[in-house]
Length: 300
Image (cartoon, rainbow, N blue to C red):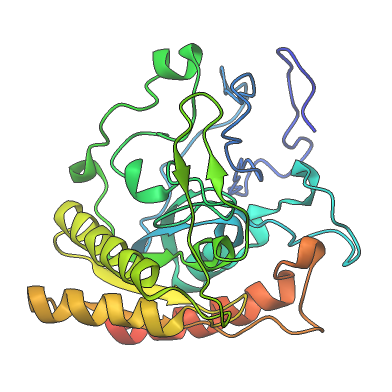
């Protein structure tokens, strides 16, 4: 953990000044939606050498997801169940690994527990589509707003070659969770199971419509990108409904640059902490996803 306050952090020293160093400063933890006080801000960089521009990457990839994309459970013993930031490791997640395999610059929009239509506990406001078009829209508090959070994001400034969506896992979980109730307004929301334990057809239809609508939003803001809905690292229960949403969108829009890709499921050998994919699972996913993206984008 980073200590509270302002500190000078040594990144490296005593190395050969004739050899260029490639340094990545990476915050391994997602923005915690309920923690408005947490902020990592780089004030300045001290150095006694030269700073060079980075080499141009072959691709640009945007990832949209939940706890899997945030790297929850990638590190830590399999028995760990505490919901704490130390068990997050986004730099070892399939998102960063895929970008590295693709020689791609990348951006990640993800939040643990959030979904397309509702969060894992049926909260209809903790959904990525509501905030996708904002800058750090999931962060709250006056200070974050002063720094530019929740402003409209300018998609023209960084155009991805591919957008990878990894959502649906939490929507599926919500069917087996209690009804969400707003303590102040009394508003209620629930993704329901029928008496026989099957997903309620009306609620499944709501999810499919929400997923297809999100594809419309993503395409509007990324008109030239390949869009891939990648799913399956924590089970495939929602695979028929996600593929149906993709199918409907493609048929209605005649958009042939949108597709579905099944990610390899996590096994007993590849599971990590908090019953989430471990690093081996993320490695498998990144290898298969990067191969698929190369086939869609062409070349390496």
